Length: 61
Image 1: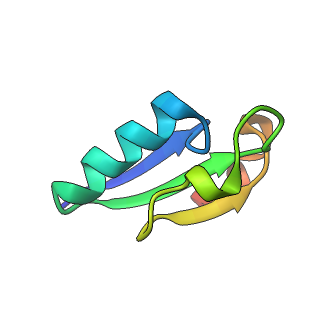
Image 2: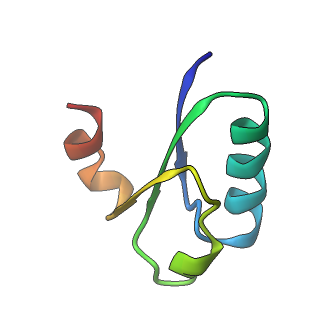
């Protein structure tokens, strides 16, 4: 099992990628500032962090 960070995971493409990773048994963190995505689009089971890729250090610590 791996750990993945999906940036833009509240948008369509990112949420589909996150869902597939979760289905494969991986741990998923979604990072999105919700400027174009929707929190409701984050798949169940993924950790959601509201922020920008420039702030990813907060997630990676």
